[in-house]
Length: 438
Image 1 (cartoon, rainbow, N blue to C red):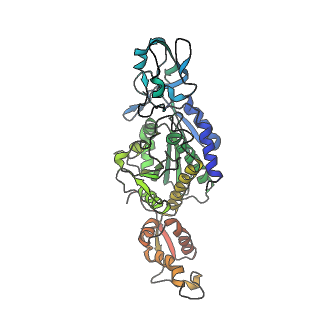
Image 2 (tube, rainbow, N blue to C red; image 1 turned 90 degrees about the horizontal axis):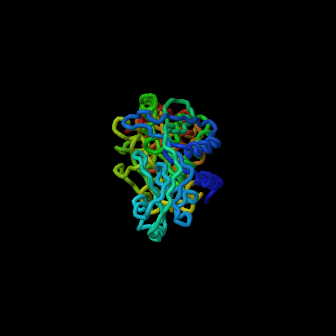
Image 3 (cartoon, rainbow, N blue to C red; image 1 turned 90 degrees about the vertical axis):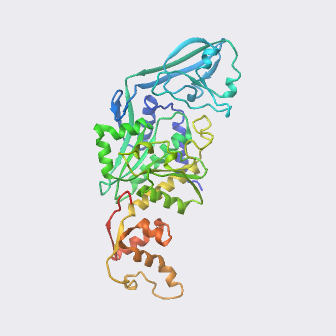
């Protein structure tokens, strides 16, 4: 059942869908301005073109006003104003008359998906081009065509957003999503919407243990830039503090869930994500790090080694609408967005309580004097307190909440009230939080 939360996120996606985003430029700024209205505490930063970021360089900024291909009668055959996927991303400006043979060298279509407009980019090599449905391309006839791309490639900035939500400790949970694709709903804006709603929810939680680092960045160059800020100061701080992280993307459709692990698959983020999926879904697709393709490539790269995973719906590159105009508002749903949001909330809730616990008395404690044992004993008594007793049995100072849940075959979220009751009764204590990698 979809609630107001799902409908709200879907509306956000609808509002941002028309914006022409790329890895830099006004589209990114417009998107961040929209998010900032929802998250006023978010700060927006800009990094100059030409800035060295590890092995990369921040590129020139790209902005576009209009683009089209028109026939001899002035009819726009391809029109950026109708769909911003019609232009190859980062196309340099051009205004000339060409024949069909020359135009064809700069056209991109998908014969296997004749009605879809592909998403094509050329970020780091000067180029120009147009994308169109293959059914339209086949109708082009010999003749002259006016090609015009009113764009600008010049020094500017790479722009990103960051919100830090403080907790009781400096240890952090990272949420990262990207804001660099034009009008695509699942592959782009679903992650933005879910991450924004998660940030709002986290801000409302009282007694947060962890600090939350939430970033809205261009994919690849954005995460590389973010990690390298101030000569790697961000990276050093994150390596010291981040206990678990998630790249939130492709979370909007109604299809089966997907899980992409960290590089070695043994982090706290891996454990909590798999546990939540195992107990919250009937089935999900288990990918490997060899199937990576988003910013986990940067966060999990050798030397960075942050504990970052992804819970998705249809994984990028695995669904037919991916990187085409078919990844539109009809592909996602309020229900799909809300389901993904709820799974991430569950992960965060468990992480917040995932301490290593230790019983404070020897032998089995007397539960009745603490109000933890039914006052009238019956054949059903043992069942009622079995989970509580099992938690006590493994609260030995060596097992965290996730470990206890796995051993006794229960969902960790259902054990949190039991943990709280035992803590309130003075029977167990949290001795430390587990490390990110086990």
